[in-house]
Amino acid sequence: MSVEKVSTGIPGMDDVLNGGIPERNAVLLTGGPGTGKTIFSQQFIWSGLEEGEPGVFVTLEEHPVQVRKNAEGFGWNFREYEQEGMLAVVDAFTAGIGKASEYEKYVVKDPTDISELTGVIRRAVEDVDAKRVAIDSVTPLYMDKPSVARRIMFRLKRMLAGLGCTTILVNQIAAHERGFGGPGVEHAVDGIIRLDLDEVGGRLWRSLIVWKMRGTAHSMYRHPFEISDEGIRVDPDKVFDKSSGQVREIPEE
Ligand SMILES: Nc1ncnc2c1ncn2[C@@H]1O[C@H](COP(=O)(O)OP(=O)(O)O)[C@@H](O)[C@H]1O
Ligand SMILES: [Mg+2]
Image (cartoon, rainbow, N blue to C red; front, top):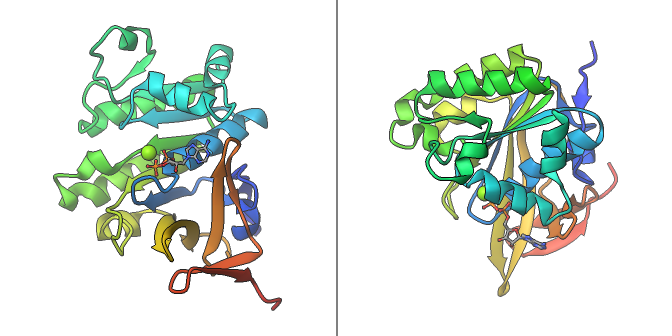
């Protein structure tokens, strides 16, 4: 049986994933600060909208006003799709405090209350009939209680897969952390994409690697990528060697 794939909408990324993310997968997008996690997740939601697939963007780390402004910087007008009823931005940041939050339709007062969080996300998904969801980020949900991380991730995953959504769960790690966010999280998700920023030879290099993706074969190489005014672009034909800082063509197999 062949698996339906959801295009990431990020140039080059679908080649790395052999066509895209298998439908209904919950994928952990993990990386240190400034590695491009927010841009990646916004681009995933935006490209879906452009293809006619409604989406939900859940923000826990930034004010929803800031989220829309950040997206607009790449030419992604979230507001327009919100007005059309194709996009819901879930505010799990302001706790409903402040003038600007009065205009938010989907507010989670206490994101660590997993029932409230899943309830609001469910309402948003059903309202816009979302096919894609991004949660930026899941880290604060279990920061102070790693033992429940697995349970929280399973609960989110079960709900979103049940609703037919393909999901990106952004996860923050420290700049030079080796893992992906702890065993509870890493094992609960269907896929792991890790974004990196490495200093080699006096400059920073961006690269990403797909560590795991249920339901598909994927590239086993670390690929260089860049961020520009248009968002993220991945080079599926090149490999980045962290130790030497060299980028070279992937040999034909
Ligand atoms: N227009 C742009 N052109 C090039 N790089 C950019 C642009 N906008 C942002 N960046 C890069 O993206 C980084 C922020 O990406 P972001 O997705 O917010 O990171 P994260 O969410 O992983 O912390 C910035 O630190 C900067 O290096
Ligand atoms: Mg971010």
